[in-house]
Every structure is written in structure tokens, then in C-alpha cells.
Image (cartoon, rainbow, N blue to C red; front, side):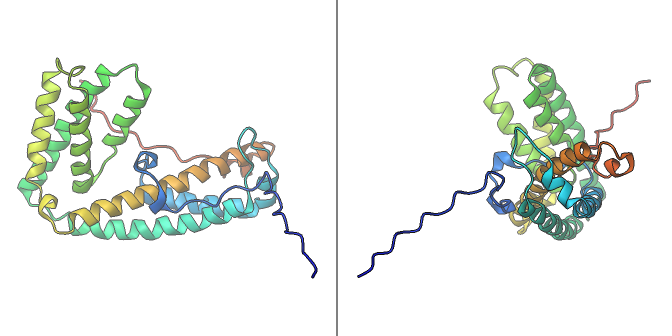
Length: 252
């Protein structure tokens, strides 16, 4: 009887990367809130997809040391994730429209809650002015839009303040503002909506999809700007989209 030797699997290529994870698989701490208008971002990502297709061979040959190089599967996954993000965002807008019909009183409560949020965040930023991570987290909170984001921000700020109560003890105005924000949010309809939890899960899914797209977009832009540094016009196609900045009132 002939004994066949077991085949040893070929070693994986150093250039190969694991396929891009699905949005549903991201951990909560990995997910970022979009830093710019999502519709504008999707339009930009689609243009980047086109540029990446046209310069595919160049991008794949570009060294990304110390990171792994871009791979064909990574570029393909990027195109698919952009399409997925667009689909998820369409559903997100439908959900937001369904919960956007606030009464005049509710609109006032929403605006007041956002104003109170800024006061609370100003206190946190001052107390943690040397902590870049906390300041970046505060910036992310200020980018929230809509009632669903407001309720999410309430939970995050309340937990943060509770965990760091000793450090923030002297910031009484900030704590008063946070308490006001909590009270105002309780009078907004989404808390009582039967679809509230589903809306929150969908917002998380949208943010996860955006996070995945942005990760690969950053790598593609880095490779493209380096590889095409001698071609000004083509290099421009690999510029990052500018982030949205929160508006501050002008000083009198």
C-alpha cells in the first residue's frame, strides 16, 4: 500500500493581508463617528475608488513599510465596503427622517440639550487639556447630529463624568449643564420609540462601516500620494477629504 506524504500548506505571502472585516464584527472601542458629512464622504470615496482602479498596479507596487503593502483583495474589499456604506447611509437617512418630526417644544429642548452638552464638554476639555485622547473624544461627541446621537452622547458623558467625578468635582457649572442635558433628553420622543434600540444599532453599524472605509482610504491615499508624487494632477485625486469642524460663535 502506497503511503502518500501529507502536503504541507504553502506559507502565506508576506504581502497578503487578512480580508477586511465586516462592519458587524468591529468592537465598540474600534468604531469612530464620522468626522465629516457622510454623504459628501461617500461621494469622495467613490471618486477614490475610480482613482484606485486606474492606478491599481502602481498602488500594489508601492512599498508601505513599516505597514504591509496594499493587496488586490484589500482594494476589492474597499470598493465593496464603500457600496455597503452607501446602502447603510440611505437607510440611516430614512430612519432619521422618521424621527425628525419634532414639535416646536421638542426642537427647543433639543437645541437646549446641545447647548448644555457644549458647556459640559468645555469643562471636560479644560480639566483634561493635556490629554489628547480625551480631547479627541470630546470633538467626536460634538459632531453628533439628531436625537439618536444626542441620547448616545448623554450616556457617554454621564458615564465619563461618573468615572472621573473626583477630577471634575470643582466643575459645578459643567455638572449642572450635564444634568440639564439629561433632563431635556428625557423629554425627546426617541426614548419612548419602539424602534429606538434598532435605530441605535443601525447608527453603530453605519459608523462601523464608515470606520472600515476610512481605514483603507487612508492607506490608499498614502500610497497614491507617494507613488504619484511626480504627477501633480493625479496626486490630487488621492487627497484626504477635509474633516468637518464644529462651528464656534464669533467673539464680539
